[in-house]
Every structure is written in structure tokens, then in C-alpha cells.
Length: 212
Ligand code: FES
Ligand code: FES
Image (cartoon, rainbow, N blue to C red):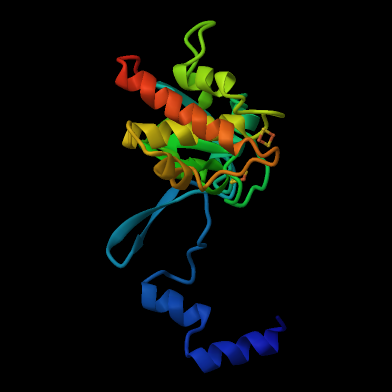
């Protein structure tokens, strides 16, 4: 957009960056993005990060890990590139496929669209947490038993989405399983196997073998 057009649009809306900053109480002399510091916005202290790397602490699979990242870095990138936790996959990188699914603060999230700094203070659970030594988690075993994977690229995200789903609904109906897993895509078309795996894991749970 040209400067002239921008100016004219601002005039039409009646809000310019300058007037917005003034109304927000932010001094025009204070850069919006600076090193880790605090500014006062309308009487509230707001922490600013960046643009350079800043130190953050994440709680991943029960262990605290400190990492230096720029504020723009996603949770998925921080784990894969900085901490070598590579179970979650980057496929679409835009909240469409679910290959990057992790459980953050008890909810399944697309980690490609969560900033690493936003995930501080919340428990982060990844697919790496599920195996106990050489023993597969019952949900992982159910994927194997029901041919719930082919190329396997979507599988870690699917397993975590299934885990989050079963944590909330331990005895689902087939219809609930289909609906509950609607946020994950499999290019190999393993949906029938994945749904059967979830129902198997739920049955094991009822039989006293916790999926959890
Ligand atoms: S890689 Fe995150 S939703 Fe596809
Ligand atoms: S098993 Fe290949 S994309 Fe799902």
C-alpha cells in the first residue's frame, strides 16, 4: 500500500498510528519492540521482548528447560530446532493439518501457531512422553494394532490429539471419535484405523488399563 493511500485510509478511519499510540498512553519516544523490559500502558506494566533472543523457560514433559529464542519463534520451532524434541512435525505451518499437535495446559494445540514465549508457565506434553522405556503407550500400541499409520508423518500429532480427546472423553461413541478428531489430517487416509485405535484404547481404559 502506498504512503499516500495509507495516509488517506487513516484519515478516513480517523485513527493513525500516532493517535493510536497517544490514546494508548504509549510514548512515541518508546520503541514498541525493545530488549526484555517493562513499559507502562494505561497504568499497567507490560513486559516487552525482542527483537533479539531472550531467555525463556518451558516445562516440557515434566522437566523445566531454558532456551534462548527470538519472540517470533513458535513453540514447534523452539522444540524442534533448539531442544531437539522432534516428535511433532511441521507440515502446513498454518493451523490446518494437526501434525504439530502437542498438549499445552491440558488442551491439544497446533504448536506451529503458538509462540514459545506464550507457552511459559504451562505444562507442555509431547509424544516423546508416552513410551515407558521400550514399552509403547497403550494408545500407541492401539495405533499399531489397528494400522493407524502408513507413512507415519501425521501420526505423532494424531496420537497427541487422540490422547487429549480421551483425557476429556474416556468412553466416546464412534460418532464422537470422528467429530473429536476433525482437527487432524492424514494424507495417507488412515482415518478408519485411527478411529479404531481410539476406541480400542478407550476399551482398555474401561478394562482398567489406563490410556493415560
Ligand atoms: S503444521 Fe501445525 S497445523 Fe499443520
Ligand atoms: S500416515 Fe501418512 S500422512 Fe498420515
